[in-house]
Image (cartoon, rainbow, N blue to C red; front, side, top):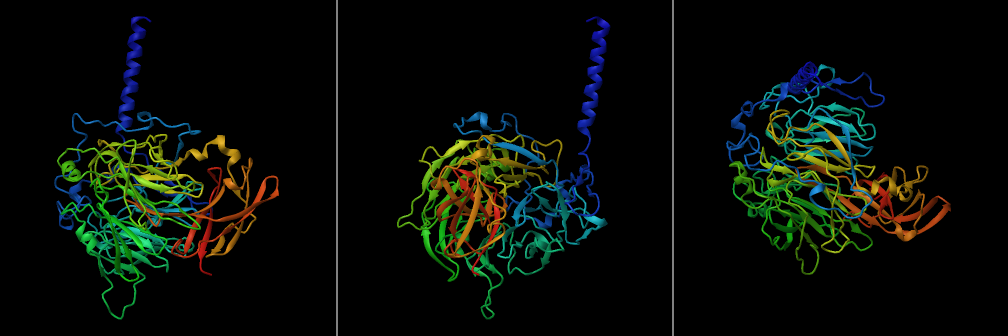
Length: 625
């Protein structure tokens, strides 16, 4: 190449580099919400992302308690990049070896932007996801339809807001539309009610005593708010659906009590029930007991875990009936130390409940992170049978440290652990080293061989990320916003508006012949399932392995936020003889759950699992008839 050619090449390269640099400085491009099939119009415009990078000082400091909570704006919170000497590298599957599964799973990007960050997520009957963030940070990246605006004089950031902070997402088409939330839903809780509606409770500021309903079957198709319905402010509280169809709402910032939805009529008595366990498990201003873990046990009592302690509550008598041993390693597991928990799959006819709690942050992590020091997260898990004669925590180790991980029950009875970080804690800018590889926990495998590291995501998901199971058997993952406002540039971990799907190894194409399909012309589609009664289920499968390889599993969809999967539940049903209808079609009878203590009334996804490979789920409604 001659000198002239060389100079020309350098000049062209310089021009290309300059163009690339200029493009990288531009704000995020505007996108349009995709209308649902049948919706009128051609989408909703989304305002420019550059408008939402608001300073923390835009919030009214009088509305926040400086230094009191990881969720608050703290004077010591850092918005700088990683300190020199720290590793910004993600932890992924390349760091730890996997076993000989057909694959480590696969990631699919469903939407690059839904206009909001998915702080809260719930799958609804009909395969819609209702997703929402908070309202007090300024505009989102998706407009309300028809020029509507939310006018809220008490909002701490934007009193006239023409953007949406909630969307309805169609998992089949990946289309979405904006929803209208009127009051602040920051760090709230929720439960799917027996009729399929989502009850959402609490939040911040003007939303902390509000109950909200989203009815997936309503033609209105938007949020209904019940101002002042709650008897106490519920910010960082947890919910659990009870056998009678009511919901218990426990805790929250400085709330050492619980209440019920609907309110229980006790002839004018205080609707709040004092609960000193939350006061006893509080670590001063750091707390470490927010968003307590709640699990309904098959005897109707409630397992409650906060910080390192656990009790069993009889909610009908408002009495603690058992105090369980503290988790022995002393690592806090509740917000802001933010581990996660699940009630492992209940296998009928004799369910023996076991609780698994994984991850968290050592004591002192929150205070250290405020000062720029990020402790390694916990890599331990604790597993306990709370109703055993002598319950004991069995401790296990994950292949890597993790805080802010989400635990998702799969139709196989296994657990997927996804999202989070290897250093730091929950809170604004308080975590480092994203853990991008999910873990598969096989609950029935021998101890020491239960964890497998799966394929990593290209997208770090830290504080305010979420993950839920969908009817395809995928895990939908969204959110991650470690900042007090939406920030896309000049930060280590930008705000994430995308939604991905993780396909677990059982969805590998090499297993297609083993994958069953629930017959659409049978009674199982949109079926009513009654307690203790039989239901016929037909399914097709390419390569049948015999009746001993078949299970039917009900999965209650979780309300997910802040690493807590509220109301998440899996029940393996007894199945009687599988008969062949034709060479590819089989039929069996399953027996419904024996009582609402085992499976509270409401909507579940029903999966047929054959040789460890689940079908797509169909919605069934479990009720007393």
